[in-house]
Length: 142
Image (tube, rainbow, N blue to C red; front, side, top):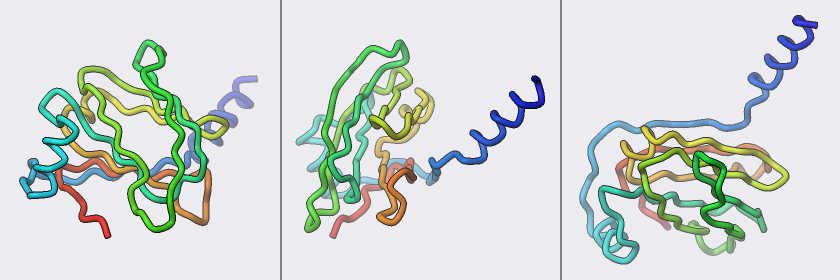
């Protein structure tokens, strides 16, 4: 029984479809970031999560560490825009991104407080994989 449980656990770990990338460096000031900071009230107490272009009517439920729903969002990209949605979250607790019928992504408080910008995208050719980039640099959009 233990062997079966260990094999199931290993297969789940190995089939993980979330790739996290961390970029080093302090917050780099730029004109675009200043506009984002002003428009969305980005400050030391919150982090912006930017959902990029490859989402197609993806239902997302955002929860706190107690599994209480913070927000429900429908992510639907437009082909001509690289950015689908910007969501701001307090960086004082863990959050859970629950993509309905797909995957749950856990983002730790430590990651939220260290990085001001988190970019999440899905490769167009694999609908159940996610790439998450933690950074303090504003990525220039098209």
